[in-house]
Length: 636
Image (cartoon, rainbow, N blue to C red; front, side, top):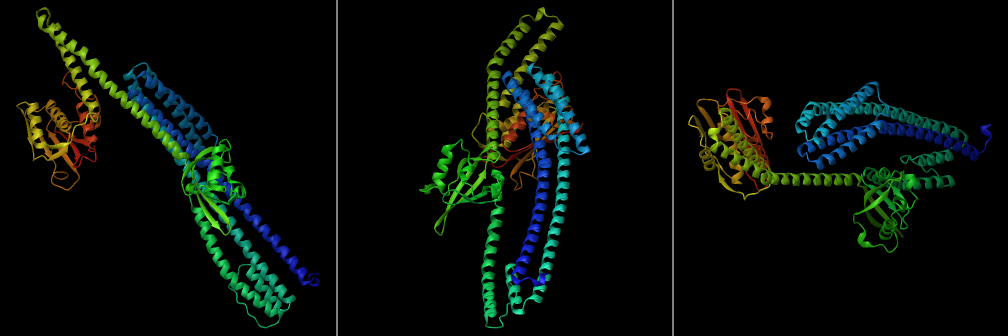
């Protein structure tokens, strides 16, 4: 029956079959790709979004810990109330995010980890952070400190460990899902390639059938035309006669050469432009002179939520919110309408964008103009700046909080200086007067109590002076001058007047450095005073040196100084504690001290860009090291 059909009918039937078959293959390929896209979407919704939610929970928990710590550092009612409000808001946010997180599919191990995190988080809030804030509201600083040490710190570390484990699990599941989708995509691709091979084989069979049915020249012409249509431009076309068939073959030959040259250039150019557009992280939108969208790259799809097919043909104004009519009007007038303001072309401006889901977001846009034949094409470069705006707002809030805290600390130093020292001086004078004028009326116990009172008053005065010195570091600036440390250290030793059984030795000549004299004097004075105060040997030795391996005789950028004593030594577990404010290792009734000296040393050294540390062995003594940059005008 097929043999009785005309060549035209055969061609129509064959071409129809091929078109239907190709459409079926294409539909199969599109279905496979849509399945892959759906799998990737599920990966994003079930794995990537929960990862971001865990990051938000971690950030909010860190902020809550910072809020409690800030309230502990500055326990004023206003700060505690403000920080409590922030804390409660963050707790609600964490609960909301956590409810969203647990709605996703989790493995049994993930469910166990989620339950553990939920339990630890509840303990951290109910047993740690809330009691600490309550203690701060009641001005029970000691109790609050105990709660922080006993509950908040351990529970916080446990909660952060739970979050880290959950995050690791989510990343592993994401990796597994992604590998599964890769395998699925590979299978679809192999099936598609097999179908293409099958189509080529089918085409060969059809060509053989036509060869038998149609005379040789026409068959050759048909093969050549089909090869050209299929993109096979490398075939050899031979013209064997000058008749109509020959003329047809010559025309096909000329057309093939022309197509090879034209299509090759177009494909190369199209591939280059498409690759360039797809690789850009900024959204690129091109429109005609009426604002109708002609191209819409993948980055623009991510920014606005529309696919390329949805956007093309639309007016660009649908990407900006209609609640800002002036914004749209100015945008179109300046860039896409007639009478364009040329001064705005190429200028980056900040405008409002409208996402497909209705969300309004800030974006930057720059518009360029290009003329193509008789038409004008505008190219819009778009960038979503929502995250940058949020970061800027967050930084401004942090800066404001730091400025407020700084101002409160300055006010506190003023209160200490003017309001506390006056009554303290009155108590000291009254105690001294009573001790002197009524000494004969006190028994031994009374004299002991009066002596203890005067000693406590002196200690309080020293503590206030230490606080003032600590708070003024970095606030009161002196002019940087060249200070001869060799001379300054000897003056410090003379002012301290070490006991006769303690010898202070300067190992080598100390350098001359550019620094504030008062600050460096405080550093050496505190370190030397501590070495003398806690000396427990009958023959004490204190050695001061500028170590040649790092500073004095090398080209390093730092001076390294050391003060070594043969005192009682310090346990390793106290190395960090001794640099904290008001911390002493010996009871104050046994050795008088404020616990401010080493904190002051650390603050001054770090203010200049250096660092301080120590090495010590029990019974052998201690060595305190500190470094200072050789060039200070870039540090202070």
